[in-house]
Image 1 (cartoon, rainbow, N blue to C red):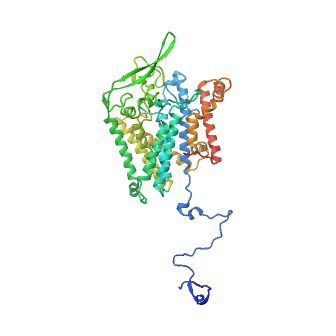
Image 2: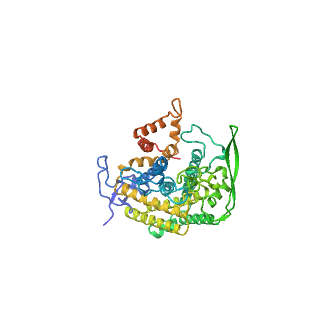
Image 3: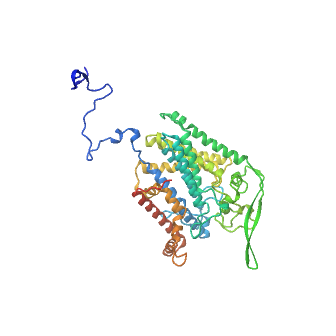
Length: 520
């Protein structure tokens, strides 16, 4: 059949020219009514080019992030208050149906809610890795398309720098926290590292890896997936090998530190500096006094810039109330008074590997287009990580958050994967969202909630306004009122912190409804 043609009117001899109505590259499409607000196209999203489609937000990531922020600070501290309020609480906690904790005098201990004194893991020890894990997942989504790698590098570096500086301000000693209406820090004793600084380093490593180590190959099979992200996996393995080599290879010699002691002579107080010597001379030790993680921090950062109240002060050697803080027992070793940074350089290097675990989960989210395949791969990865953690434990590397051991990284990465899998199924697959909407709001403004609530910046500011006496402020009066209502300091404090969590969830929801999101 000949091409359909039409005559085109024109001047002179051009009026007789004939051309096809359709070019060879054009197609005939059936006529449809133009779309209207009342009758939108049935597949409008699919009709758009892929690069113009607005990606559907993965709500479970917001819920995961919000839940992590909620339990990161005050809730864990409240559980510690409940643990330390009476001897029977120090012996352990029990799970009960309607309340999160209750004590059963008959026995059967629930491990402490606070961080493990040195070896082992508790509920609190999964919070920081969860932060780093979700940062890796988010980085995979943010940097999946980069038309300009230089601009992306600049953006990632600036954001990491802002986060690091914010961490130094909030956790370096400048802000003295609740119940202290003072601020300021001696630069000779400022703490350079902390939680936000660790998150900044993890984000920077994950972002740079995603920008520079991932090729542009099309992923259409498992083999192409491995080829695309092989260099990132190699980087994660290289960091792990370097960590193990330093931890077991560095020689830790005898070292000393200074402490300030107070003496009173003739009712005149005076302070003096006393030097303590720690006997080491070992290689490969994972104990508090002679590990390579502390050695690297003392050499590169200096003793004055380390955390002065380390978690090992709650060990049996250092506290008569172990696993809580308490007075030194008789004949306590000198290292109980030594500084140690739980977010030190070497441990932060290992913590960055948790971001690589999150990157893998994010890549699966990007390239697997159906729920079943995503969840299957996540499940297998989480199982492999968890089993590997216990295998490394059997090989002689215990779980330790202060050291951020390989076994601890694998275990917390696996548990974070399980948690993401569960939330993804509930929220994004079967769409049960309403019970989690408060955490979703908090997750969408996680940074401002963490800074104001978990870092206690907002309560500290509120306490600055008081009536006649510093104790008569809105924060302390509210907490005291709840303790009086419940006729218990323990349950009153718990009610106060739960109220605080709900307040910040609602505050985050208000910001969400107003379209306000704090980003660095």
